[in-house]
Amino acid sequence: MDSEKIAKLQEMINESNRIVFFGGAGVSTESGVPDFRSVDGLYNQKYDYPPETMLSHSFYVTHREEFFRFYFDKLILDGIDPNKAHKKLAELEEKGKLSAVVTQNIDGLHQAAGSKKVYELHGSVLRNYCENCGEFYDLAFVEEAKKKNDLMLTCPKCKGRVKPDVVLYEEGLDNDTIRGAINAISSADMLIIGGTSLVVYPAAGLIDYFNGKYLVVINKQSTGRDASADLVIEDAIGEVLDRIVV
View 1: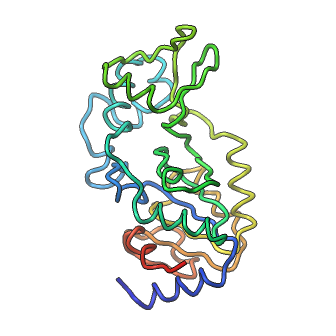
View 2: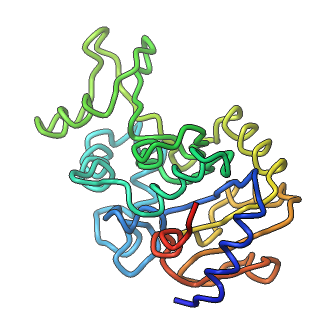
């Protein structure tokens, strides 16, 4: 790990008071959550249908049992805990340095680590709702269905269909979440991009709203924002942030 770059990152954080973190799958892979595009990611595993098809709205409607078989298998994971990145970001927020986390992840690990202001662009597996009566159900409800291999996920109240509150392919992002993320990014004095390849739109386009002083990219691979960044660190996001003293 480049100690000079870590020292520079520490200096930037010390000078900033409205930091926003924009993160993707790479933040949670260190907790054991599979990403989509790596060698071992979901896009490179074999199923009857491609993952992007199985996680689409139309597939959810027309192949409900197969949807939940894949969803239970790959997105409802046991023994997943926040890692060093999640914990450091929560600490930065607690100390008044970080104003928000904007995440493309749906695993709820930022909140589990203690982060309060989290904009979940693609929703969360922690929330589920009945499409008929609107009743909300937590992750425990889905975990119980997984244990029973209940692939229909039916509302106990009205027998309607329960849907995970995640943004599937073919679905739009939540407008309130987008507005909150834009406001946070546009008012930030430092934006840290971490654990994301920045190829998923419209989420990645939110970076364009940043007009602050420091733009930092921390990712194992290069991204399309490297050239415009004030600092680029190609390393594991958890290991990098763990070196920061708050």
